[in-house]
Image (cartoon, rainbow, N blue to C red; front, side):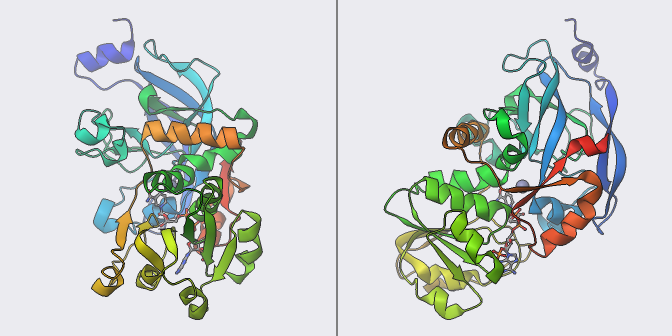
Length: 367
Ligand code: NAP
Ligand code: ZN
């Protein structure tokens, strides 16, 4: 055994670490400021990635403000970011998929138990003992919590690192690692296809990818938005129809017509009013994660045998499939590039729904 990290692990010690620049929130204000964190030196199975781009997900905002306190309370300092694209700068001796200089990507997970029934079928995000998420998750090797992509570098087991098939647009690829897979996976699971009518609620980071995928799968795609100024964009992105939800009569016109509706809205809204829009056996799937519970009436589900479901990101195998699908079809996210020093302003804008349609941090600004 030649690797230092493995030897120290064998001796029951933690692997050596190195310092990396990052931006972190220190408290529930969510205000982001420079921070230095420690990453482990790569073990034989790890790759060390120099982060080039990191997308800004609304989950980052929920998490730095501790809005999901009942589900996963935030541990501070919190370094968010789970839409990571970068370059491999070190590959451990046992790494097979990557070599130094390759482009690589990391999404919302960095590990799982890999042996439970869900991991065995490639759905590591539903790991029975709990996946290790990219940030604010218990860190099994160094202790403490994991730190995400608003950072210079990250060290991840290669089993949780994705290949980047479209190196032509690395920044536009970054949001696929969360916004992309979170909308692709449920559409695959519920078999969105040609001849179906599919709704997408909310035109943000997830919503705009949802519209692109529904279209790519051949569905008649209807976007529901609260923002009058997004109607034209909804059509440009591929929606066949755009419904402005400020007028309830416009929503009701679509009664009993949808095979599938994907709800990406990040804040409280009347979910029950959308359930009557489903056809018989239609499914309404939540991917948006508003912090507060919401009321649903039995008779919004019973007539028509409607299903109300949730879906979380996607497994590693499916994430790679999605990246390959996007490269093949020329799908990337519509992004607005920012410097890390603009992150607090970007959060303000994200709260107002003022982003077209994903902020991506150019990590060169952290140097
Ligand atoms: P985002 O870019 O901020 O987009 C959210 C969109 O929701 C907004 O653009 C807005 O669209 C709509 N919206 C906001 N407030 C609303 C309200 N009060 N009523 C109705 N619609 C409202 O956020 P995102 O990054 O796409 O994330 C969306 C949600 O998905 C977040 O809650 C996030 O945490 C969650 N998420 C879940 C998963 C998962 O695995 N399930 C993964 C990633 C993210 P319009 O202006 O068009 O109305
Ligand atoms: Zn996300």
